[in-house]
Image (cartoon, rainbow, N blue to C red):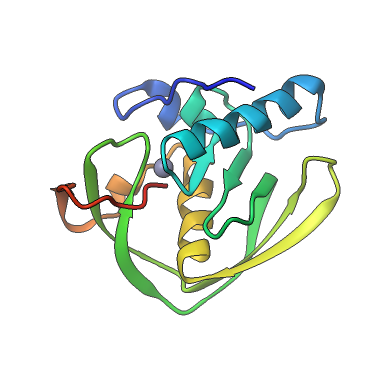
Length: 159
Ligand code: ZN
């Protein structure tokens, strides 16, 4: 496993639409391992492949010590609404309030290319929406309600 470099806002790779994964090759398996390592090292709760410069529809999420791999994810249901603070490992030192669904259901493939369904509420729902936005070239900064704030001393959850 190896740490990957996290691309930051201003890098064109973060604005691109990612391609579907057709096969989980050894390279993709290594990418998944590296993405988890990179995310944990950076104290994040989610990381999308374009954030490490790979334009593939692949994200890793871990909001509660339950690692989730989502390949070619699609949101198939949403419910409710939540507005809360969000940050991003690609937008270091900044945070802002974003409104997201309070519940999402996503259909995806896991690292063995088996179809899975993941449901999440609150932080997990927020993380799923945030990470899936990355796959279409969107950052949370486009959706912030009110000002983008500078993160103060207090440690924030970054996605
Ligand atoms: Zn992000």
